[in-house]
Amino acid sequence: MWPAPPGALRVRPLPRESVASYLTRLAAAYQLTVDQLLNGLHIAATDTPTGPPASEIHLSNEATRRLSGFTSIPPAHLNRALARKPPPASIGTAPTAIARWQPVPPALQPLPACTACTIRRSPHQAVPAWIHPAPDLPRAVICTRHQQASSDPRQRAPLDIRSLPELTHARLTARRPPTASSLSWSTTITTRWYDHHQHLHSRWHTRLRQLTTANPHLPQGPASPTLTCRNLITYPETLTLAAALDRLPPRPLTRTQQTAFLHDLAHHLHLPRLAPADHDLLWQRLTTG
Image (cartoon, rainbow, N blue to C red; front, top):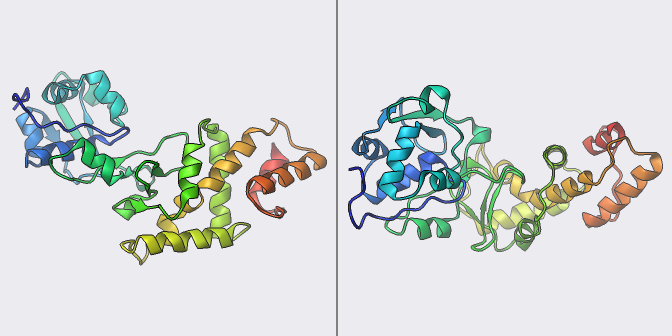
């Protein structure tokens, strides 16, 4: 099967798509399983395949070269498009073509990609795609063009966010990503606020209701929309808080500076006031520096 025959089907990877997702879509275009595709490329597959998002495929350099030849996509372009970290040394340096399936922890699993973007890159068969969120933004995938988004692999399909224009606006205006430290703090803080119904509960509850109304396919039960949609619901405020934390000096604030910061943050969050309690993580961030 390698290299591809003339007139081969053109299936392009999405930005930050998982390797397992791309190979699944590529194989489906030829009405094959991933194992059958790898076998045709003379790539030895190891371990039990379970498919995305719960598993990822690590390719040796030789396997990547064969995949590149079959798809007519240069290896550098292929690696740039796919969310492919350097393979483990035991695989990457192997002289043979190897593909190893490995499980992915839930917190690191890719998210459902926009269906419209996926169809554009695999026009022969609409197979779901799974992509990783941008590492310097909150853990969510937002397609501003087609108004679809996802924030948890348990959602299984992207959500319609046309009723929540603030999500698209937040993604479009995030031209300068926050630092990793500020993003980590802000994500932890807004998650705590969300779970404990603090400060922005009314707004977030309304947003959750709008999401569930627009997406009746959302599953209930243990993985309810309250949990699986949390990162999407808090997305705008997480970015706003991260940007504010980025402006803090490296030392603890004085009482006057704390008051000024909270007043300014309340303004940007569209709150009349913001007075966190001593046990609030935001207050801890302001007092510890």
